[in-house]
Amino acid sequence: MESWDLYDENRQLTGETMARGEAVPPGRYHLVVNGLFLNGKGETLLQRRTKDKEIMPDIWSVVGGSALLGEDSAAAIQRETEEEMGFTPNLRRGRVFLSEKRDRPGNGFFRDVWLFHQDVPLSHMRWQEEEVQDGMWILPEKIARDRTLWEQMTQLYFWEKAYPYLCLESMRVRIPLGTYRHYKGNLYQVEGLSLHSETLEPMVNYRALYGMGERWVRPASMWNEEIVLPDGRTARRFALME
Image (cartoon, rainbow, N blue to C red; front, side):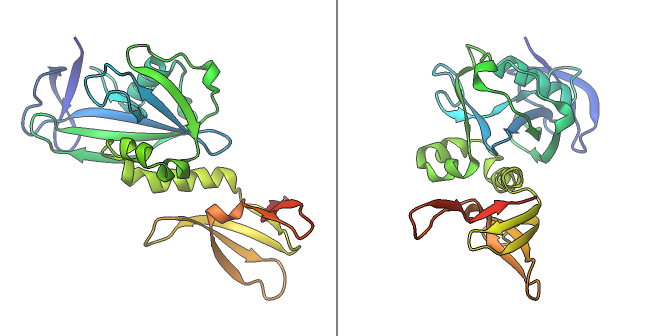
């Protein structure tokens, strides 16, 4: 049976432990981790839970679970990824980008959400049969467009909070800093990406390399769109030059 370390409200180890399935004592917390991954195309990794899972069966989710006795956050996310998906996360290319504390009767916990930049083909993964039945790489914005998929993902308490930043990091992969040529010929310098303060949509901040050097903001989703030219050919709205 799994055993967990217990923490106080300041996330300090208390020296107390508990067994999985027991109620977490009042004022105590255990540690939960989740892992989000982005590949070189800006796609994120989802796993489909098995149909006989007791909690959230047969839905799309992400790597995650409770830290075992003696594990810190990094050791826990490494073990969970290896067990569930069959590959080792590159901790040097990962970081905790969201932490939260949840007070729930009998199940208080701290959660660390990790983000890794790592390319792992599905064919190189070995899913844990009792946990995972399928996996896929998908662009984050496509999750929001699929109502069923979005509803499944929002069963993860942290998802809606993490999602805008996952989109932003995905766009950073797809829109690196540099000089771009607009399909009409002018050059622009991408200086960074940001989130819209009201909608949390990823935005590109860029500067014209001609005229007065005006600075502009454009939704990142438009940046790599393909444009149909008058002669019928297609071109990217902005093409990376250097």
